[in-house]
Image (cartoon, rainbow over all chains, first blue to last red; front, top):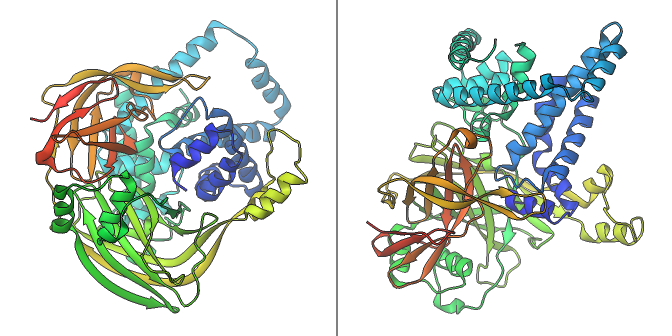
Length: 186
Length: 358
């Protein structure tokens, strides 16, 4: 089924949209989440949460590229879960979790500032990524968006691992310079 | 600034860049190609709905497709375009008793139509609930780069045999597809099955009278599933070196227009002013480039995505542009039927703006 047909099902609030999304993008989402979580059970739960996230988001959103729309929600939830897991593993994990939960309830100026900063950082990163040469951009996105391993990227592009590492190193240095120029607080 | 914060902020980079990184690959050892790319992105073939037209007057595969697509007869110019540009191939290959025939190809520089015939040793079960599914990665150029998008349709093959079917595959290319030589390698014929009876039974029993029904994972897996019809592979080479690369730039100076830029929570459209830098019309496709501004650098920003845009011909007939994909302010469309560039009068945008042909 084409993306626009699946999106139409979401807009009609037809639950078949979820099955279609799972059939078409299930493995894609699993791959994104599993690269972050490295745990099949957590990954499955995250992907299911992502489907519900898509259900909640469409409408009002109406994505043209459903794959990346679902992918972004999956990645965001996977990172959040990874943060929760890490906090739980630390000594006194509940304290960190509680602080994190309470932080949502404090409408402080800092929260607004943080949100503005995050939006600025996101825009600066977008400009940086789009300005990179194509291969460099794809390697960078594979590593830091999809979180593919160096080995997987090397195989995919038929590069040596050292070439991938040196390419990423150069890109990171460029990113550092770019963020400084954009006056992002480092 | 922490690495974690940086990694999180990367989430909202341009969707096109994310998709490109997922689909593009440098020339690699062919044997390894599929290892990283067997992400399921399957396109199910949809049956074209029949329309009232004189089938006996239409002989070519593409003529039939476009006539059904537009519900209008083709003009003599369009028929001439198809006859001049359709590559008749008629190459057959057999695997496991299933014969695939690559019948013909019609393309411009960014959209490729392929007609395939299937002859099976048994009745083909295609209908609304049993559709053939294709993997978009089955089609790749000599650099092993795959297209941006795929849709697939069943054509009426004009006979009464249920052992045969004609299909049309429509591929749209990304800016990374720069090769002339392509390979269509279908590794298996796969059915996407919707078990409507099972689903209806669930709705009538377990979920009877309920609102906001959500099937469980197990139920969804039974109601919607893939099954292999037969394994292949079938492999065809396609040469696009002689494709018509003509195009028409409709914009001489960037201009602003009102365009659908999103939706409110209640579903109503949000129209905003956008600047359009370029509108390129080709025989089978079109590309609109909008200006990305600070406030519109957001991922997934796709102005014009729900606008109805038409190319109006000198004889006053209108050909609609259907959106395929968008990336970095560039949106790609396929045309409802072939556009004869010499016959274009103007482009009609959603807000009524007319752009006259140069």
